[in-house]
Structures are given as C-alpha cells and as structure tokens.
Image (tube, rainbow, N blue to C red):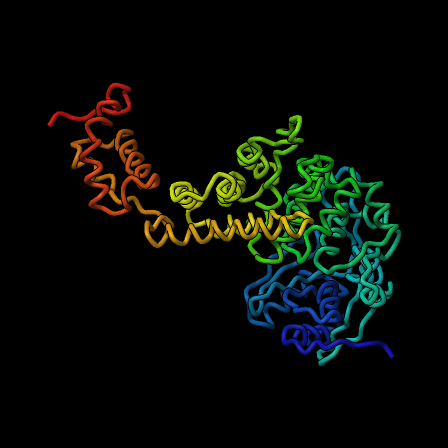
Amino acid sequence: MRESIDIADPTLRRAGQLGKLRGLRVFVVGGFVRDKLLGHPVTDIDLMVEGSGPDFARMLASDLNVAPPVVYEKFGTALLQHDNRKVEVVGARKEHYIRGSRNPSVEPGTVAEDLSRRDFTVNAMAAELDGGMTGGIIDPFDGRKDLEAKLLRTPVDPESTLDDDPLRMMRAARFASQLGFKVDRRLLEAIAKMCQRITIVSQERITDEIMKILASRRPSTGLQILFDTGLLKIVFPEVAELSGVDQRREYHHKDVFLHTLKVVDNISESTDKIWLRVAALFHDIAKPATKAFIEGTGWTFHGHEEMGARMVKGLFRRLRLPTDHLGYVAKLVRLHLRPMALVDEGVTDSAVRRLMFDAGPDLDDLMTLCRADITSKNPQLVDQVKKNYNLVLEKMKEVEERDRIRNWQPPLRGDEIMKVCLLEPGPLVGVLKDEITDAVLDGRIPNDHDAALAYLLAVKDRVIEAGVAGKIGKAPSP
C-alpha cells in the first residue's frame, strides 16, 4: 500500500476537490511533501496538474474567491495568494536549458517526466490530491530513503540535471546548509566539472541562493561546498580569495577563509539578522589586498577594515543587493576592530564615547559581530578576550548613563547656532556643530544644552574667524 501524508489543509483540499470535479489529476509537489515528511513547518504550496497550470490556477482562484493569479504563459505557471501564502500552479512539464540561454525551454509532460526533471530526489516527490485528508505519496526516485539518509542526490544523472538548470549547483549548497544534509559524491563531482555553467544564470538568482545560504542554520556548510567545487571563485571571488591568507595564529584560525566561515557560523547562532550575517561574511574581505609581512610580528593587515568598508559598495552593486542596507554593512566592517583596540589601548571614557557615537543605533550589532570574531582554539585566550569585551561593555554602560551618547541628538540645533552666531545656513554651521560634538565626545563638556551653549559662546568667534579665513562660510553683518 502506498504511503500517505496528512494534507488536512483547506487550500489543498479545495484544490483536490476542484480537480476531481473537473476530471483533472492534481498533486502537491516538492518542498511541501519534503517538509511534511521531515516534520518542518510548511508555508508556500506548489501544485502540479495534468493539464494547463494557468487554466487550473484561474479556476482555483475563482473557487477560493481570491484575486486572479499572476500568469507566466511562457513557462506554463501561475501564482496566486490564499491565506497569506503563495500558491504556485504548474502543468506537468518537461524543461531544459538551451546552451547559452538563461531561460528554460518548457513543454507539456507527464507526472513522471515532471518529477524526473526536478533538482533532487527529496524534492521529486508528490502527493495526489482527491479532496480527502491524506494524499498518497508518489516517490519514483527514492526521495523518502534519501531524506532518512540526509543525502542530496539527483533523480537522474547529475550532469543532465545540472545542465538543465545550472542554478541547481547553488541550490545543492543551499539545501545542504538548510537541511544539514550531505551532498552525493557524484553530484559534487558534476558540480566541480560544470561550475562554469553558472555564468549563464542571472545574478539575481545566484545572489538569492547566497542569501539563503547565509540565512540557514549553518552557513559554513554551503559556503564550503561552493568553495570546494570551484563555484565560489566564480560567484564570489573576494570570499574565495580569503583562502590561504595566513594571519596571527594566536588570535584566529590561520586561514582567513576558514576563520570567516567560523565567524559566520558563530553569529548565526546568536542572531537571525541577515544583514548582520552579511557583515560577518564581509568583515575581513580586504585582508588579501592589505597583507604584509613584518619580521618578528608576522602577517599584518593594516587598514583592512577601512578598505573593506570601501569595497562594500562595489560588492553590493555587483551582487545586486538592496542599497538601503549598504551603509549598515559598511559601518560594521569599518568598526569591527574598534572594541578590541579599546582593550589594547585602554578603555578611556573618551574612546568609548567615540565608538558609541560612530556606531550609533548599531552598537549592539557591532558588539555581536566582535564576539563572533573570536575564533581562537586557545580556551584561555578566548576567556581573556571575552573578559576584555565585558570590560568595554561595562564602560559603555557607565558612559551611557552619564552622557547619553547612544541615539545621539545634538545638544544644540542648527537653527539655534545660527541665531546665536548671527549666521546664515551654510557649511560654517556644520563646523560649529562638529566643534560642539567633539567637545562632548572628548569629555570637555557634558552632553546637555546649557553646557553646549556656554561652550559655543566661548569658541564661536575663533571658529568663525578661522572659517571665514578658510572660506568655509561667511558671517553676515550684524
């Protein structure tokens, strides 16, 4: 007797009932079946129908009383929304990529052909819907067995599967990270052999897989697979080039690539913030470009944090990442050494105020990144570094209680500075604001309005005179 899964889902039951009424076989396929068998939460739904996917999607949308589906006639697919979920409907098909093309060629096919064209056996299972509470599993490629073995394997010859859609090479790394599965040896060999084929895939699709790897439970698994197969050198060469870059062993892993993997895993254990994970991946990105050997010290990477921050813009542009997160990632890359520098140089109030001011609302994320950056295998050293960071945190708490540096608001607004100094809007107003800010951060005045006003009255003539002489701005006649 064929195994069944629970499909007591209103959307699936309605789809099955509609298919039965119309004389069509309807199946739920792919991730829904896989995740049900794994006991994972199930969200979006992929349906397959023997017939026209768009036609059935239109009928289903009408039956569910939801908005008409978005139809992609060229690919025979349609997408609708129901109960805050995406429901994709496709006709049973066979497809392949024409060499050099970014888009697949699609033809109608049978259920068996449709399942055979899918990426991995664990995604090549279907459950037939007839309107009841369960669905019989169709598993022609032993996907259930591979689920139990935690193995990613292709339904047919791996080279044929990858040739049909080269993005599947990235997806193998992503699913390995998400599910904690191993990748079949033959599949890994095929990826290494065919890795150049990834160049026909759009950057958006590649970046989406990279981001899903970073969002997974253990990103290092997927990143290591990308590296071992040669894919990383093609899709993200700056990260691949971290391999073989030595650094001082007492502080980190000897290899910067392995160190970076550990940092990304560390941070993934403490936060789901995807852009903080991106910052962890980028934090040492400039070390190959700044590497120098100093006798008696070893390899150094002076300025890699500043150069790395400047590289972020180019990386975002090439990977086509949303630029509204660019400043955040660049800031964390630029500042990731500062807390350790405070420990080395002495945790003074002034230095702490400067760090808190520069980090602003992202201070907690910066400290999370810094803790994740501790990857030494020497437990005594790790304990000492963590104690040092705790000293910095304590000092930050003291300074914040006294000086209110976090979520900084200038003690004097620009309009008040203009009124007091008889200035018009212009660069000189900013110079005066910076002068007041520096005085607060250096501890020369407290962070309050009256102290800032008194300081302004004391320094304004000097600053204005210097500004006028330097043609920064001009004070109007009284």
